[in-house]
Structures are given as C-alpha cells and as structure tokens.
Length: 463
Image (cartoon, rainbow, N blue to C red; front, side, top):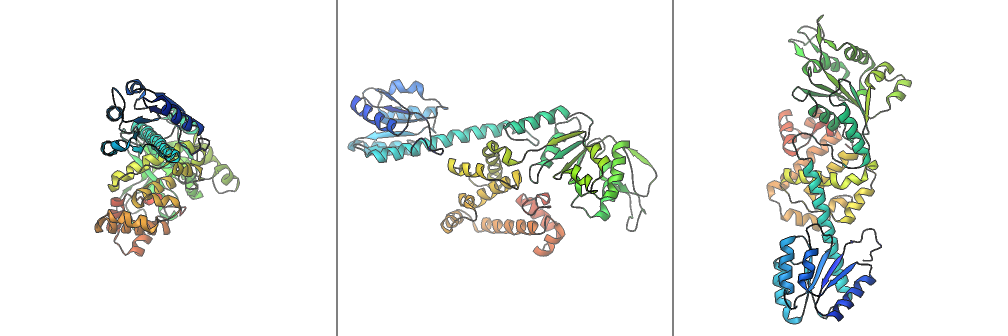
C-alpha cells in the first residue's frame, strides 16, 4: 500500500468535510502513507478540480451544509462516471450510501472508521482510477489508427524511426529488404508499404519462399505456358506477372534455392519476366519487397545466399525491432489485439490490472508481436487465468463456461484443435487435413471462421 512500490497506484486525493478536526485527521493519516491530499470544507469548492482527466479520487462526507455529499457524488459522476467517489457516512446514512453506490459511487465507509480499512479502500479506488485512465489512453491511441488498412502501432523511438523510414521510401521505385526476427510483423510492414503507396490500387502478391517445395517455386514465380512440362495442360500466370503494377512480397527470401536466386536477380535487374516454356519477355512495373530473419551477409559468406542478390535487395533495408526493444508499446498492442479478439468472438474485454501489464512488459517475447497477439486472443477466449502461465484454474473455467452456451464451448474446443494441428505441422494444410480428418475446403472454412491464418504457423512452431 505504500506509495514507494512501483505497482502502487498513485494520484491525488480530494477530501471534503465541513469538520476541520476530521479533515486534519484524515489528511494526516493519508499523508503518513505517502498520498497527496487536498482538503476542502465544502462541496462547491472541490467541483472545479474534478475533470475527466483528473487522476485522483474523491472522499466526501455525506452530511454537510449547502451541497451535501450525495449531491456532490451526483455532480461528480456527471463529470466522469469513472471517477471513484468514497462516501463517509454516519450510522443513519447507510441506506442513502447504498443507493448512491447503486447509482455509481465507488464505496462507503461508516464512521467511526478503521484506519486500515480506509487505507485499503483508498488503495483500491486509486488503482481503479489509474486503470481507467490508462485504458482510455490506450483506446484513444488505438482509435487514432482505426482507419481502413494496416496500421503500425507503437510510440517508442524504434517504431517512430521505422515509420519515418517507411514514409521516406513509400513511393520510390527501389526494392526493399525487411529484416526482423520471427513474429515482428514483416508481413504487416510489407502490406503497409503497398497500401499507403501509389501502387495501392494494383495487386499485392505475397509468397513464402520457405513454404513452397523447390520443385514448384519457379513455376509459381514465373508462370508457365501450356506444355512447358508434364502436367502443364494450360497457361498459368506467375506471381511476378500477376503483381505487375503492384507489389510482390517475398517472405523468407533466405529459403530460396541458389539456382533460383540467379533468375530472381536477372528479373530484378531487367524488370522483365519470362514464363517457363516461353521465349517472350514480359515487361514489369513492379516493386519487390523481400523479408528475412537471417543475417544475409553471413549466409553469403557461407555460400548459402548469393552476395550479388543481397546487394541488389539491400538498396533500402528496413530493420523491424523485436518486441523486447519496444516494451513501452506492449500495453497499446495488447489492448489493440484484445479489442479485435473481443469483437471477433463476441466476448467482454476485461481490462488488465497494472501488475499483470507489468508482468507482460517484463517478459522476453521470443515470438515477438505474434506471440503477444496470440496471448491476447487466448486471454479473451479463456479469461485472465491464462496470463498465469497456462490454462485458467478450475474455478475460473467453471465461471467462464457458465457464461457460454454449449455451441460456444464446442467452437472453442474445435478452434483449439485446429490451431494445435496447424502448429504441430508448421502450417502444412495437407498434413493438418490428414490429422484432423477434414476435407481441404472444410478446413479452410473453419480457419476463416476462427481467424486462423496458415502463415502464423509456418516455420518456428512458436509462431
């Protein structure tokens, strides 16, 4: 309860009482526990201080000349329903205080009161006020990014610098290399670059170089003519050609076979593509965005990545910071992901307490933003107990299930099974189909229903 604790709620306290001896006694008690207190002898004098962004709480006696404590409570709640009001009552005022709590007052304390009880109620009220204001701030920041299209959330210097670099190259013709750890949001940045550029009305085409077998990646990128190889019974447009006028995003570029890197380099330099089985060059007006989590120069030194391709891709490199280097953004990101999940699953969003948020900010997050997003979604689905390192305790599960229909519980179980299968098979649709015993279309339909995307499970199983 001591204000020295980093998790102790802070904020001023306004105390209203027409009796000077009681005002002085309460003020002295609170100041001895490191609270900042301002006293008033009438309700009229405290009202100008109370605003929606005032970070404190109000303690008021009920029986006072002029405006009494109940009227003051009513006026205060009209200013801000989230401002805690604690009423001090005589024995005969208890029924009025209970009615005031029904109408929005935070709590009441009967005179003569126990000091420890008063301090406990004050601590909880300040904690609630701090949490209310923090959530308002987070919601306001989320709303600032609520326009259509992807948004890069964050206010830390690392993210501001990244956004500044992105906007400097939005409409340049230069190809771009994104460098960041697994889960930092390379696909989001690529999409942002496209959707906020002059190419936004043309196609954005994404391909994961690590997810395609080497035998088909060339035909996927360049396309082919009918008869180009066995099974090619009709012409197919490749990803380069389909992205003409727009953006081609090559994720996990380090996974591209060396033989194909030579052809990619030629396309990047000549801005022309040739379908397999054809002799005709197709001009390209295209921006290529490549992404990697690996040290490409080191791979080049080891002979695993062409150095000339690295230099060609390295015209503009945008580093994406890991979550552990932008911990101050975690509250905003968690709130955003939780709001999205609560809307998707039609569940109530229970605000996090400051202690829980502090624990989130202290973690290392090896899976970065993707790991945080998945945790926020599980938090919405399974409740606050999930933040303790696993499934909620039995009583939490019972409380949660008591609010769910049978259909909702079945859907939650089904979603967890599909997610587990995708994670176990690293995003392989074919293997997940087999293990779940589902047709391809059914699996895709269910993934769409539950907001699951294959790319979130490709590669590292923590994704």
